[in-house]
Each structure stands twice: as C-alpha cells, then as structure tokens.
Length: 182
Length: 454
Image 1 (tube, rainbow over the protein chains, first blue to last red):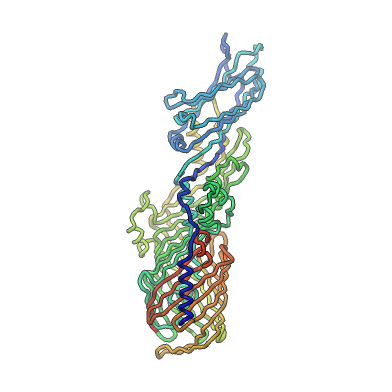
Image 2 (spheres, chains in turn green, red):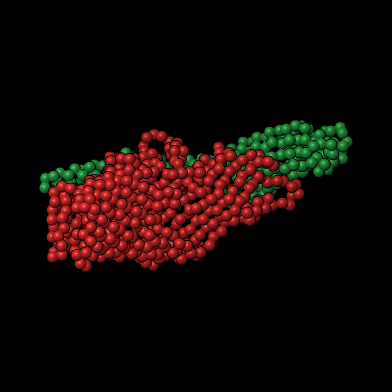
C-alpha cells in the first residue's frame, strides 16, 4: 500500500498547491469603452434658381431645412457621447457667395449651439470641418433640431446670376466618439 | 453600454459546450461510464449513487484566451488587453462551460448478461463561437473599417439548461460482444440558440453623400424558450427548477454503445450519445431580422415639412423587418461520439461474481480514445492516449494525454478507490494547468461517490 499512499499524497499535494497568478478583476473599473462610428449625415443638391431674389437686399435669399431628432436618440447618447466631428464638402457652383450656417436647436427651437457661419466664394469647393467636444459643450446634448441654412449673397453683377450658375452641392458626415466607463 | 459589455462578458465566459470526459471514459467500471457508453461491461450486481453527489462534472474553457490574458496584475492597461485579445481571436475560437450534476443514478444486474441502469441528471450545456466581426464593430466602431464587411454569420451560440431522465440496458450477447442502449427524456428549462445567420454590414463611399451604410441580405434568427413569459423574463428560481424536473419543454433521445473484445487482451469500444431532440413549445421568444437596407444620409428637400427621421425609421422597418414570434421550434441535441481501443496487460486476476460468472482482469491497460462532438461550424475532435493501472484490487488510476483544440499538452489523471461498498472517484483534466489556473484555456473535473455491491 505504500505506492498508492505515496501517489495519493503526491496528487493531493499537487492539487492543493496548485495556484494561479494573482488576478485583478478590479481592472474592469478602469475599462473605458471607446469607439468611433462614422455616419452619413445631410446631403443635397440645389439649383441657384430655387433661391428667390430679394430686391435691394444684401442677400438674394436663403433656404433652410432641419432634422428633428427623437428624444430617445439624444437620451441614448447623453451619457456616452464624447465628441462629434462634423465634416462637409460644399461645392458652390453658383455665381454668388454662399453662406452656410449650421445651428443646433433645442425642443423650443432656442439655439443651444451655433457654429461659425462659413462664407464660400462663388464656384469654389469648401471643406467644412468642425470638432465639438461634448465636455466643453455639454449643452449640445439638448439638441432636438439640427438646422442648415444657406444664403446666397447678392454680389454678382450679372442680372441673370441665379439662372446662370451651376448647382450647389453638399455632402456631409459625422464621426461620433463614444466613451463610457463601466 | 454596460449591457453591451455584460453581454460580451457573458458570451466570453459563459459560452458553453458538452464535455469530453476522456479520463472517465471506460475507467474502472464506474457506474458513470455507462453514461458515456451504455454498452460498457459492468462487473458488479448493484449500484446506487449518493443523490446529488454521485456525479459532479464541470468544465470551463476558451480557445481564444485565458483569464490571465485579461485580468493578470501585470500593469498593462485593461483596454489594451481587450484590444489585443479581440485582434487575436479568430472566427474559429469559441468559449464553453459545462456542468452536470447527477441527482439519481442506480442500476442492478438482471442476469449474468444484462445490467439495467437509470437515473436523472441536470446539465448546463452550451457553446458559442466568438463573433469577431460583431465584437470589433461594437468595440471599435466602423470608422476604422470602411469597406470592411462585418459578417453576422459569425453569430453562432447555443445554451441548454435541462434535466435528463434516463433508462439504459447493457447486454452481453456473447463472450466478446456487449451492446447497450439508453433511452432519455429531456426536460429543457432554458434554451437559447442562434445559428445559420446570414448578412453583413459595410460602410463604403457613397454616390450621393460621403458614405453609404449597407445592411445586405440580413437573415438572423434567435430562438429562446423558458426565459420569457408574457414579455417578461422569468425571475423565479422555482419556475426554472420545475422545468428541469420534467415540467419544461420535452424531448426524447437515445444513446448507443458497444464493447467488443477482439481477443483476450485487445478491446474496442464505442458509443454515440444524445441522438435526440427537444420540442420547444413553452415560453417561446423568437426574434428574427430579415431584409436589406442601405442608407446614404438625409437628403434635404428644403420644404420644411419633412420628418426625415420618421421617414428613415419607416423605411428601415419596411426593408429590414425585425419581428418577434412565439412559434414552437425543435432543437437537436449535440451528438457526441466516443471510440476507444484498449490493450490489457500485466498481472491477470480472475474474479468471481456471486454465482453468476467469473471474469479475467489485467492490472494494466493502455490505448487510444477518440471523442467527437458535432457543432454548427465543424465537429470538435479530441484524441487521447491513456494508461490505466489497478494499484490494488480497490484502487485504480488512469492517466491521459489529450490533443484537442485547446492544447497539445493536456494531461489528465483519475483515481477510483473502493472502501468496502463505497466508491470514491475524482478525475481532473489538463493537470499541468493547475500550476497556474488563471492561464489555463480549459479546466475540467469529475468527482462522485457511489455505493457498489459485487
């Protein structure tokens, strides 16, 4: 019986002294979920003739449109949104200077975040890039409406400027940076 | 986000599969070997397991990473570790956890050729491949993966919590041939599964806008039973327990086994287990997603009357239909196969069993075993070489070396001791990993107490 006893002892000793490197499950508290999603946003193609000329004014006219987000969309993002990069390419094919304004509005249509308006010369391509840091601008989380407004300046000497120009084209996208701790 | 991570963690650590019990297979004539091969030769007259303690099996494993890779106290940032693991995972990697507890196990000899056995055990048996693309999309986003197809076909998982009532017979037809069969009634408490999914998600350069997001040929099905009733999760342990004990979704199945003595020393044995199905009819919740959807952004119309988000949502619902239903479904049990070739040698011992019969035994045996379990993507195979020795009449040992998906250095060991009519056994697998359990990709053990009467 010496042999079995020895084997049993050795097996027991091995199992009892088996060990594991110290694991630190509390590391999960340090885990920060970070991801970056790219999504298409607004696009349009509009003919200058769709702008109506105002008499005697500095601008010919402006057109605007907006997206209305649903509450759950902003609620969902509220706790995890870290940064938004707004990118747009605007091709001003018209013979007039174009002004682009992007405005973030709350439910009551009050401005919560206003971007600097961009002036784009006639017949030029402009790359628009805006970084919005949510830590610096948490008010943007109150956004319900995203409004795009385009104004054509009355800076053309040609009386048929609106009809002569090519289209105004915009395409845009958004990089959404998400950060969340467990 | 917490939920996403929780799901991810659950998937990583609680993804499960049925267990390869290579140390237990054909070992020491234990009653539990009958569950691995109903055609095993049984050399005693009566056995009964100590209820709840006769057979306890557990196994946890992950072919992609170990706990130490993730939680070692090594000063590396946890985010970097997770990123490294996700990059290293392949679509062939999987996680598993298995647990089985015998509630009742008993058997008796009818005559010198026939042994009947029966019992009831509960089992958690599940399995899941790591859906690398889905993990990557959730963890990193799509920005760094433009033009990259994220495949939903990688979502393959199965989880079963069930009770099994079984009744089997082992019959020695000739001196050489013993055949056996076991009939099983399954009672599923919980079933979750998703497989045969198709579809992909990709972000590419758009024609009208900067990017185009495309969901192509999506056909994802997720079935569950026993979890949700009237749109609410069952949260009573009593419900689950009742369902395990034949109150759940029922099914039937059977095992077949053979032992054939080629000559006095050489023996072949084999079995095919869990040829069966469960018909899920209670507390069903099936979720399906089917269709294709492409999104290039919102095209402004400048009429100020458009509700763009509503329009997109409506189009999404129309083109990529996500639906729930409570239709019954059938799940097949994962079929397992065992085969072994064993050569006996050493000292020859002749034992007499009551007045029934006498039998020759050898103190030593060596051989090879093959275990296969059929999984959705491919069968998983484990090849084992073993050596077993009777140290005394009452003490038997077995050592195994197994090559499988997890390791080429899997050494297992088992011991079975008989103190009068009390039999104790303990078997561990992957014994080298006990030097550092946290680095093990796979750990399993079986232990139990039986009363055996010769």
